[in-house]
Structures are given as C-alpha cells and as structure tokens.
Image (cartoon, rainbow, N blue to C red; front, side, top):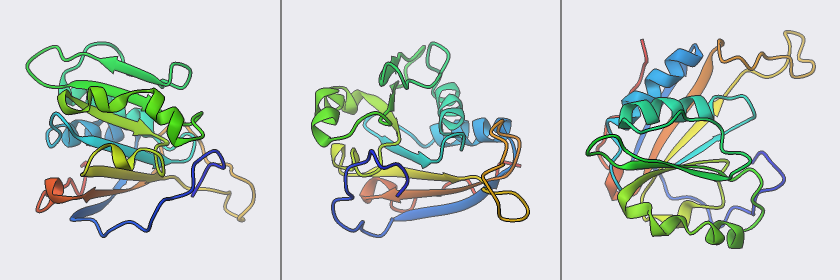
Amino acid sequence: MSGAHRAKQAEEKAAPTARANLVVPTAEAMRILGARLALLLRSGDLAVLTGDLGAGKTTLTQGIGTGLGVRELISSPTFVIARVHPSLGEGPDLVHVDAYRLTSLAEVDDLDLDASLDRSVTVVEWGEGLVEDLAPDRLEVLIRRPRGDADGGADEAPTDGDENRYVTISGYGARWDGVSFPTSVG
C-alpha cells in the first residue's frame, strides 16, 4: 500500500463482483474513461481512486465530472480536502475528496461525507483503507503508471499524463454485480 499516512487496511477485501483491466494511453483518454464511468454512476455511489502521485486520479475525476454534468472545473482538492460540484441538471452532485493528508478514520468522520452520500457521487482520491465503510458497495479504481528508467533506475516517468497508465476497475458489492466496465478507451 503506497503512502505511509494511510490507516492500516482493516480486513482482507472480499472478491469484486465486477472487474476490468485496461490501458489508458493519454490524459485525454483518462478523461474519456472517467466520462464513460460516469454513465454507470448514480446517487449514493462511492468511488475510491488509488495510484501514485501523477498517476491520473484527478484527471479521471475530471472526466467523471464532465460525464455527470457538474458545475465548476474539477481540480485537485488537496488543500481543501473535499469539494462539492453541484449538478447542472437532474443528475447527482459530485463530492471530490483528497484523503492524502488524512491520517485516521476520525479525520474521515469529521468530513461528514455520509451526510451527502445518498444524493451524490463521492469520489475519494487516496482513500484506500479509510473510506470503504462509508457505503455497502463501492467502486475501486487502481491507476498504475510506469516507474523507473529503462535501466531500472530512479523514477523518471513523466507525469504529464501522455504515457500508458494501467487501470484496474473493481466493483464491490451487489450494486456492481453484473455491471460491464469499459475495457478500452479507443
């Protein structure tokens, strides 16, 4: 598990009820994937995004915001921790959370995310091990980017988004049983 700031993983996860693996080649393709995921999301859904710095979590969330049709530009909520993006139409609001600075379940509780969960789509970056208990079902998106140079040295991978990202989408719980996730963005 990346990030020493995270709480210990509670118990071993149950198997996902739906899963897809895909390669996402560019930042724009990551936004397209987010927009496609938004078509599957509805009020009450919790999405937990995991990946290193620069992996594309916020870029994916930008696509989700576009797909949901929410107001305001989606940017990393690192310094405000949580930001609500109201729907411009009939769809759900988007609650975008960056749990990077959170170190305990008590700090997650202080955000009171469960108060708006049933009428929003809640996307939490860096939430692994902290927010899974907010909803009985959840979507987890793991984004991996290449690490190291060709000789296996230091992390030299660009962070501009225009390189392959390897994405695993997993749905946990009855909500995601039988759902078909995107398997490509091309």
